[in-house]
Image (cartoon, rainbow, N blue to C red; front, side, top):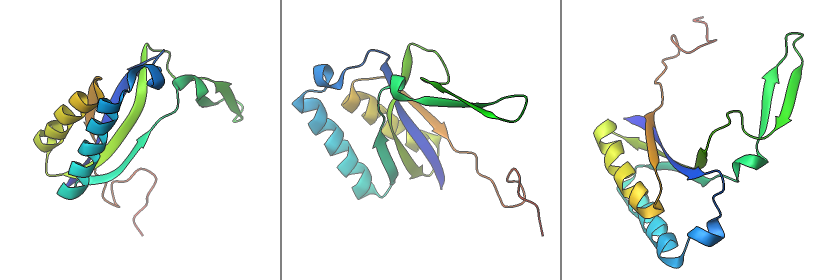
Length: 126
């Protein structure tokens, strides 16, 4: 089984209070229950607004510089996500279709890279 992230994208000015009505909340809760019953949901979470993010960068001298705001300046940001463990991309996309309907927002589906201990970055075989 492979793990996939199903990420919900919101516009920069997304205001949950103005957009998320009772039917949307019900649809998302129903989707969460369906994922749990199917045994595919590993983790799920909503994100605070992108403007509350902090970005960290390594300077040439090795010090860490912290700035307010997201790392990338875009018109959309991840508003929430699910981590699912499913057989393949087709199954992940089936859940993604349900997520885009429930959340009434664009969805991105991406697989996690599957590392073995020998191929994992920074891990040496002993």
